[in-house]
Image (cartoon, rainbow, N blue to C red; front, top):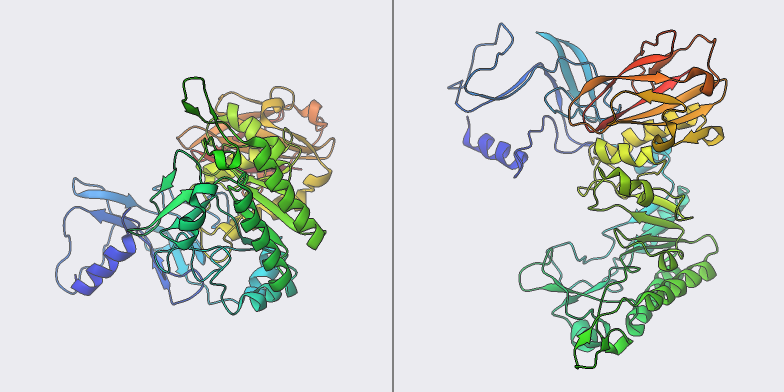
Length: 493
C-alpha cells in the first residue's frame, strides 16, 4: 500500500477505528463506488499494485477481523439503517445488485444550498452554536468571553436565517468563566462555586474553567446584560443557556450561600431561590424584548421545577442513562413537568437508535442542535420520522405510553419489548416498538383488536419508515423485526 494512502486511511479511521467509504463530507466532494463486501484482516492479503478480482464471496478465517457481506435490504433513511455487521449507510447510499448478491451503491450528494435544506427538512428554529470568534470548546483564542469577540457577520447571519422563517437563538450561557483572565481576577471570589469546582477539559493546556452560580448577582447581571445586547443590537430571537439554571451546592458567602455551624465549620447549601430569581429575570427580559422570544434551558440531572419553570423549552438528557426506564419515565416526559421537554440524545450528539427510540417511547422529541450536514444522517432520519407521524395524524390520535399500553392495547411476550401506541379508534394505529435487548430479533406483539376498535377489519401492516409489509394473523398477532437497542415504527391501517 502506498504510504500516503496508508496515512490517509489511518487519519480517516480515527482513534476508534472508524472506516468510512466515500467523501469525508456528506454534501461535498466526489464518491461513486459500489461496495459488495467489506473485509478487514490482521495480515496483508495483497501485494504490489494489483490483485486478482475475487471470484467467490469472502469467507471468515483466522486472519479475518471483520466481515460484512452487506446482504441486507435497508432504507438509508429508515430506523437506523445498519448493516448486519454494524455499518451505517448514510447520505447517497442505496442497495443495488452486486457481483455476489447485493451491494451498497455510494453516490456522494452534490453540495446543497442552505435554502434547499431548510425547505426539505423544515426545521423549527436555528441555533447558533460556535457563533463567537472564541468558544470554550475550541483550542484557540482563550479565554472565551460570551459577550466579546463577536464576528462581523453576526447580524447579517441572524437576518438571513430569519428570512428563511427560522427564529434564531444562540448559545449564550454556561455556568463558568475561563481563566486565566481579567474576568477571573476581578470576579472569581464573588461568582464562583465554593469549594472551587475547576474544569480542565476541554480548555487547552494552561487554561481552566471555574464554575459559577447564577445566584451571584454580578454573574446574573453579566449574563442578562449580554442577552439584552445581543437581542437588541443583533436581532436574536431568544437564548439557549447550558446549565445557567443548575443549582450547585456551594459555601460562597458572597451570595449568601452556605452556613457556619457552632464549631466554626462551613457547610454548603443549595441556593434554589437565588438561581430561580436569575432565571425569572432572564425570562422576563426576553419576553419584554420579544413576546415570542424563546428561552431554552439546558440542564441534565438537575431538574428543579421552581427554577426550570422559566423556560419555553426544557432541554435535558445529556450524559444520562437512557436504559433506566424507571427513571426516564419521569424525567423524559413533558407530563410531570408541565413544560415542553426536549432531549439531547446521545452524548456524542448524533443520531443513535437507542436514544432516539427511548425519546419517542415517551412522546418526547430529540432537539437537533446541529442539523446540516452529517451527525449520522440525523436530519434526514428525523425528517422521515416526522413525516411518518404527520401522515398518520398523531396530533388527533389517542396516545398510550408503553407503561400503559400493555395489556390494554397490545401484548408483548418479551418484557424488554416496549410499545407506545397512537391510534384513532376504529380506524388505524401507529406502534412505536422499542427493543431494549442487545440482540436483533423478530419479536411477537399481539394487538388487542377490540380495544383498538379494529376487530372484524382487514388490516394492512407495514414498517412506517421502510415501507416493508409486516404479516398479521387473524387474531392480530404480529412478528416485528427490531434491531438490538433500536426501534421499529409500525403502521396499521
